[in-house]
Amino acid sequence: MRSWKPKIRNFPVELPGPARDTDSFEIARPADYEVDDAPPPVDVDFSFGSYHSKTDVDGNAIRYNRTFEVKELSVPVSKADDLKKFHRIIASDERNTVVLKPASK
Image: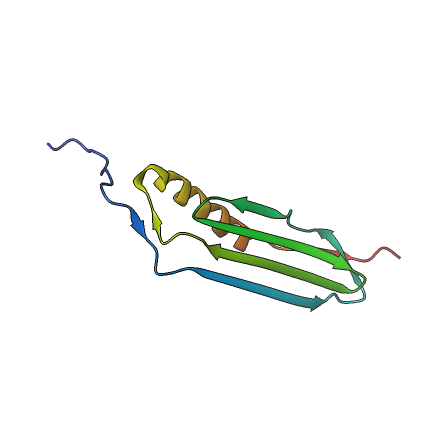
C-alpha cells in the first residue's frame, strides 16, 4: 500500500503576461424591490497581482466594478500559497450576489 505524499513545487508559477482587466456593470433595480444585502468590497494586493471589487446601490441602480491586475510574470515557489489564496478570494467574490426583497409599503 502506498502512502500519500503531497507534491512539492520546485519551479515558479509562470503567468502568461502582465494584464489589467476592468469590468463595470450597472443593473436597474425593479421599482417594487429594495436591496436586502450586497457583497462587501474586496481589496487584495500581493506583489504578483491585485483584485478589487465593489458593489454600490444608488437609487434604482446597482453598480458593480472590479479590477484584476497581474503585476509579475513569475510567482516564486515561496509565494505559491499566496497565489492559491488570491485565486480563492477572487472565486469567492465572483459567486457573491445582491439579494433583493419586496419594498416596504
